[in-house]
Image 1 (cartoon, helix red, strand yellow):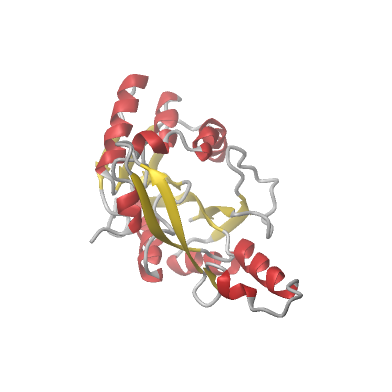
Image 2: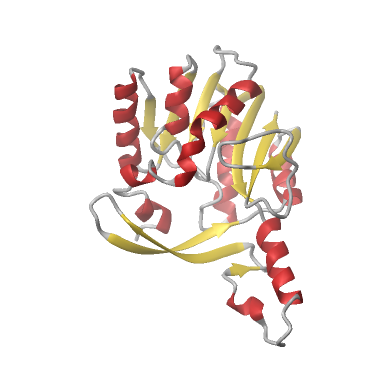
Length: 251
């Protein structure tokens, strides 16, 4: 049986590229370029590359990029887009829970929940971070976005505290305070026009937790910022109002 994220990204590539959050690609790539000082000798690994929106833009700007994804449908679209853009995108089907490029890359990117933190167990999500570490050279970086646990934690507690009718409103919330997982229904229409409803299960992480996980793997220094679509910036302090956090982990 397929997991929800496998089902979602089957026959969804065209629709994915029309999603609102994909409009920020150019500015997000601007940020990535700045983080490696515009050094085109740097080798970049796009983990969970999807339709290649970040990879292809980086290739167009002259960078060396390799990508992988679990969805062959997404990869097929990425190759099609790369060809139309006049670049060659080396990408392959691979599971983020099981990869090791043996310290080959200077930078790893995992933007817009490319793989982490969509997995069904904490151990699987942790394995993705471990694999990323083993694929990045000493002195390299991992830049990724993940779901910010401060957002649902703050709003769940606030809603409970502000409740004046005495009912236990938090029971209706899809966010589980014990596991930091959000269980929700996602309705969409795939590229064949078929309407689907998926039960999603996503893991949120609080800043102290994600920092500890990365340092326990071996990353030396971790920086956290608010992740605003198409406007990644080091000036954006992470707050309880940020749905996602931008993570920069240094080896």
